[in-house]
Length: 366
Image 1 (cartoon, rainbow, N blue to C red):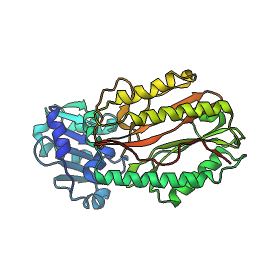
Image 2: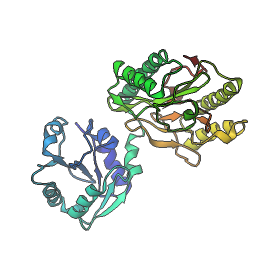
Image 3: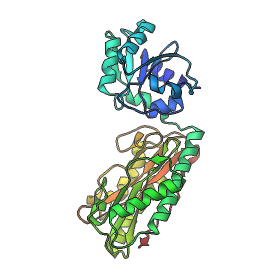
């Protein structure tokens, strides 16, 4: 049965009269399961007081009825359109017209906001994405267990994949092996489209696998990927070298490894996101490779791949037990070579736990 106590507390703390959600990570946290975000609007409204309300496409009612939702449900059929359901919503809660309604600014689409505005023309709408998403900052025991499973699947798939890598393969061929291994080891989906990048492509932080480049001896081969399991997303990066590795690239790799270790070393409850990033960046900035550092240390991880807290300088958010985020320093020599090493970190009462266990030692494969 859905529990709305967390979001009601956020609504009250921010002086709102209600909050509205569409399918996505926040919706999943509240309802216990996800639905497709599609052309048919499905909107959940949680008021400051009183029962929650939901507008649900009729074709989703069979699934929605399994949730145990206790509130007003207004379903609608394609042939009738959704406008009538929004009118019924307004009739059920006329007090919200003229009220303050918080929205997920990074999730809700224009046509859903416009439908709400038509239903409540006197209401004032606020982008409360950060405040509403805060309900996901502290992971539940079940979410942590599912994240562990997603990471385990990912690491098993990576080990199986690199065993098949050979000089002369294309990045797309390697990516195909990785995808096969992810699902054969139990992934229920992908956290995001994997990054498999070799040689000069590894220096592009968000590279795409190529079909026309064949892996050569001495190339860096970077994997950034993750399995999805029960809604939770793993996010892991490891960089290997194929065939051989130069002494310069060994030093290049070792500095990223040092920064990765430093970020984890300073992680504990009471530390700030700024403090973690600053410790990592100092390692890179004081090295001979300072010019090749290009991004912050990491980001929150859970039902969304990128969520709060952002591990970056200037973010003074205090780390609390139950938060999960990535530590993923990288160095990128554009046109030549990139190295990134990414771990998923759980903040605990007495420090932290590194949920990823795949070796970070420099490894030559193929």
